[in-house]
Image (tube, rainbow, N blue to C red; front, top):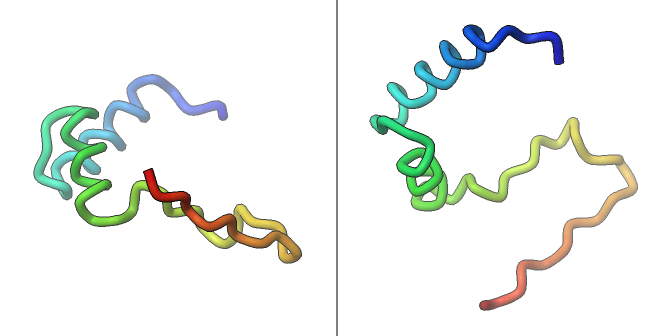
Length: 57
């Protein structure tokens, strides 16, 4: 993706601050609590694609 390691670190730091977390494990838990852990932006989906229903565990 042609992004430096330092740029990735900086962007993660900003995300962590906004979410009020300190590491990836906490960020994943935050995303699950907020219901955004399975979010896919519409621009990533082909117009003719159909969502698959989530199966109960």
